[in-house]
Image (cartoon, rainbow, N blue to C red):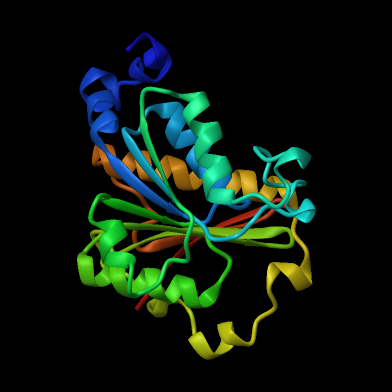
Length: 232
């Protein structure tokens, strides 16, 4: 427990809370700009079991924001490299790599070992698969996204039962530009990813969140932070 002394001192955590964290299981879908941040903090805080799902390989253009990768990792599997580095960070945890695309066909097999999902993807089709299957399995979903200088975070399929399709018009999203075409600011990934990991820990501890039925929008270009109340 000495490793986690500073967070155990928080009255909201304590030794009982740390035990809950050590027994928790979280699936991180996407090992990119958000996923590397989310997984790093969850491992640092001692989440007992973490799964990393990603079928992409590391490219040079990833390195400015996906800070656990280096030039020596180019061309390698994101899921395998990230898992290896996280195991070095905290050898006491169970960290599993899924070097494959998450689909409706393999979702149930992968998710059966986890109780919380983090959507760190940048692909709409994958987001819709995650949303649909978390709904079907009644699994809390911490959802975040970033683009250019902006990002947002919300909780789905939690106590207020919001779904991804309750928030956005899918036809509009299908026509939207991707990060590849709009570019992306590195620190906004760190901000949203940090908040996502914080929400995971709050779910584990049973702490209420205004992101359940609310959405935090961040624009770091003009330092705007807005919490929006959601309506289905």
